[in-house]
Image (cartoon, rainbow, N blue to C red):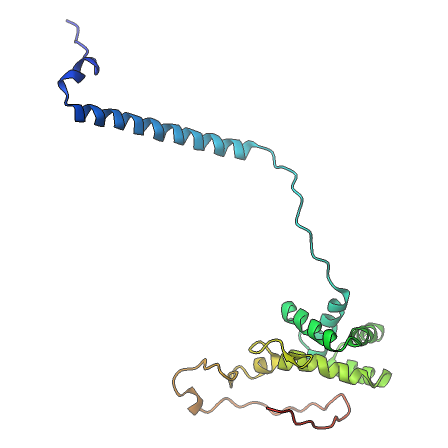
Length: 210
């Protein structure tokens, strides 16, 4: 005796209209999910199998040779192997905008450093002042830029100025309270007294307005 198969269409007349609509909706939902999954797999497979297209790389910004010389001289004068290039670019722009002659003077410092293979700040400072007295003020501007964050008489950077980096284990920049409550009441750590001698000749003391 064969088992009778019931057709879902033949038995649907016994179901309520709401049940029929729900059943149809479920079938449509399952179909949509299946089709979307197949489409996603096909797209993923096609993307992974497709050969890489020849793309044009973005243009590399040209490096200003003047800025490159400025950074090289700055590394020597500050005796630091790492300096922020973005800060250097801002300092260099402000410096040469205020005094265009600084471009040629920085190039002269770079040439002196390369010609005599100068390594330390003291060596470069002595050789520069001996070659041209005007280079002394150029060195001052470079050092003021990095340590005070000022170029062309304008503040370029503040908290990242090197003067705060030197004493960051003892004091904090003004307006920045990085310690806890009443942190200033504790005794700061001892700082060794400098023993080096200045490389440049003495300059007149100038009191700046505050």
